[in-house]
Image (cartoon, rainbow, N blue to C red; front, side, top):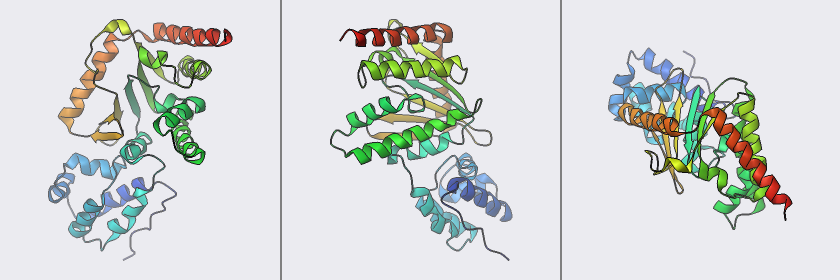
Length: 280
């Protein structure tokens, strides 16, 4: 009997590994819940591994090899999943983005990575790492711009972002950079590639005051929520937890300006930056 196909790390390691996991599980006559039990994870988590929306960890690979009798296959190929252009706390979320059919995000302080210009991303990463070499910053910026290639497709994934007004007003990179960044967002909105709303300062207190929120949904796996803090990040897949974050996002959307009014505000603030820049 031929052995499992060797994974190509340059392709899509998680998708290939997930497909092999599904094949091996079904060959063993196990349901996703059956396989999740000895790993102390839910059946939905196994489904996410199979769909390529979650990253397999080494201890999970070891247990899968043991349960499925795959002679170290998952351990050997799990190393491919460790290679990422993104910081450790964000790598799994960035990889999940590529499989998502819808991405909904609330951004309280910064323009989200998918919508950033090169100059804005550079200013953010330089602020995060003030003593890093230019090569390091270049690599981070390149990875950020690579993420934005998701928007090259004219329709998929659906991207819906609520920007707090603070993200528009914070002078990240200076007036020129901010003007360009906001015009870029406006252009994406006018092309109907993204839905953008602004949560104005006048809203006051709201359900997402404690930080940013990203929701991702998939065609063949349960939804995920991603929460990010200072140098930390965590994917949530518990259905009840994700549903609570979905309600949070819905309430934020309900408090935000309409897309039309939001676009007008974004373009007005961009014009203010341009005008102010010409005064100096």
